[in-house]
Length: 79
Image (cartoon, rainbow, N blue to C red; front, side, top):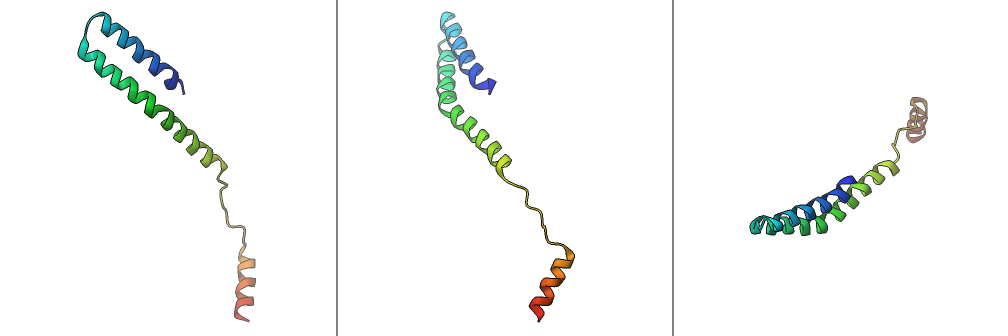
C-alpha cells in the first residue's frame, strides 16, 4: 500500500527535476508513466485486496463423514 502513496510523489518529483534540467524526452516518458500509474494502480490494488478478502472469507471444506456413516449410507442404498 505504501507504493500507492510514494510512486505518484516520486514520479512528480522526477518530472519536475527533468523539466528543470530541460530533458524533454525524459519528461514525456515520466508523464506517460505517471498517467498510466494513476489509471492502473487503483484497480490493481483493489484487485489484490479483493483476492485477499476472498481467500479469508472462503471456509476450508473438510469431509465430516466418518467411515461408519459411509457404511450406513451404503447399507441403506443397497437395501
